Amino acid sequence: MDVRLLCVGADAIMLYAQAPQGGAVAFIGALADSIERELGGALVDLVPSYTSLLVIYDPLQSSHTAMARQLRQLARNAAVAQEHAGKTVTLPVYYAAEAGQDIERLADNAGLGVDEVIALHSSRKYRVYAIGFAPGFAYLGDVDERIACPRLATPRLQVPRGSVAIAERQTAVYPAVSPGGWNLLGRCPTTLFNPHSKPHMPVAVGDNVRFEPITRTEFLRMGGELE
Image (cartoon, rainbow, N blue to C red; front, top):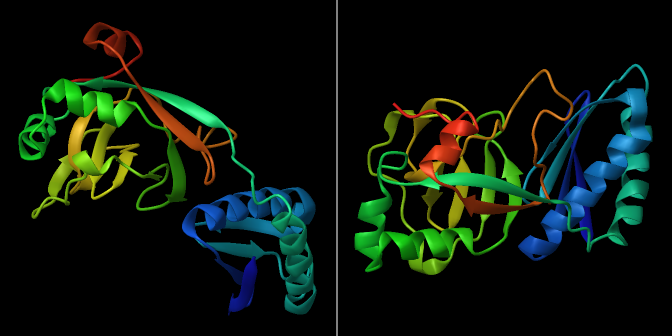
């Protein structure tokens, strides 16, 4: 694993991992876990992505040189855990036009039935590649190429909380009401970001997600909302 460190501030270091995407994601997940354990109070924040990891530290507790040295050692140690797969999280989804207004159009464009789209979307395990765009928004991949779909030409000003969507070969769940240009398939009742809980999210970079179809009644019983 080739790892490069770059100073990006008086209290921040960016680590870049060069490897095939899946391997880099696994490595970043293992490294983030190790850094969180080992740095203790010197760590302020971690921001993982596909092939990079931003480490923000307390400059009163460590110098840039010392922190870089420690991160290089932790990266070497984490390389042996590259097969780190993370946990698997199952998210329930109510797939329907009333919960995902693009599902029928997506099915028509793909030459499939709605039930086939649901089966394809819920039949595989997705890797959490990155967290971004909004707190709790996890980029998941890869979607079956038969249901891959470009982003909307004009994003919506408001996408409902819990909306399950596809853009190209990635899928995601909107954790809160927000603008968005992804194609909506359904809705998930699970809370995906809670600033008052530890951890704040049920998933992390390197984890895996499965979607489980549920009925309208089950969705509402789990706390899901429909306009």
